[in-house]
Length: 164
Image (cartoon, rainbow, N blue to C red):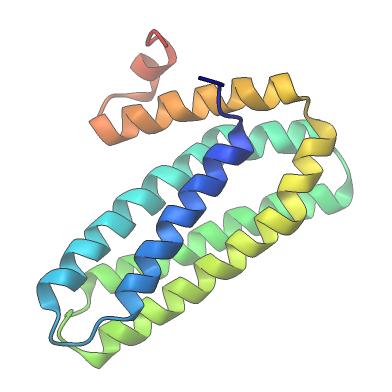
């Protein structure tokens, strides 16, 4: 099996979250259990995804890229994460049986779709220009190990020393 590069891994995460958000925004106030389950999955996916991007991918991109426009992309992406995590936090506190929950879910979906669009149209093509295929595979391996550690509750340090 071929090793997955960083961008492919991130795009797969994007697709998974997009499908979950579409399902969530299609629910009604009566679908309490479905809303709770989807929100739990979305929360886990977004938390793991933003961490691997901010801890591994974004720093590697920033270091390799170097242009002012790349620096802006880096900081804008981090700020979009902060905004999405804030809305996600508000959504987790909202009553899933209300229209307000549906409104917050829609705003979260719009924020995520905007962020994903910028990454996939601007940041990822630029990353392919400034990072070699080998570097992207190595970054992808580190990101996958980190994501596995996050999902299993291990520490960052133990994930760094885990065998592949």
